[in-house]
Length: 147
Image (cartoon, rainbow, N blue to C red; front, side):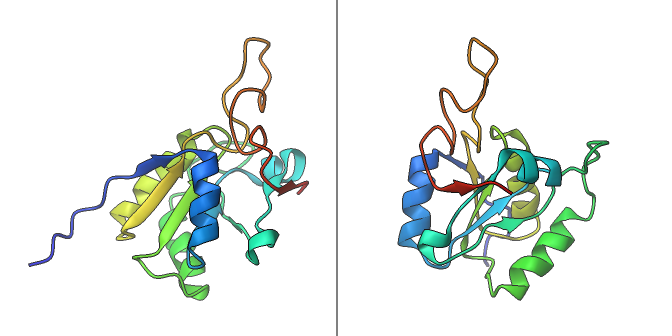
């Protein structure tokens, strides 16, 4: 009998994420930040790979409530794109916290290869309280666009 327990979520550095997205045309990047973050901070750009980032809020802005229907909404969006439960799905947020929770929720919903982009889009804050200075998608100079 097949083991149906959710797979553990793997933390993947941003550069490895890019390489894995490049190597696997079925892999998907899901940005779980808020609409405000997409608009004001930017979004990863996968156009060089012939793909688009799937944008799906984990929390709503401005009240920061976790969207209880997230697994259903994302599941429907993934299905519409032809994504299978065995395809790699990378989750990204600002610094890796929300994306890990979202990845865990989708793993619990039956997606077998949920991966957390550990450094996130902006990474942690540095000693001067700035982001994108020590880690993250932007710091790694990976492609991104203003939202």
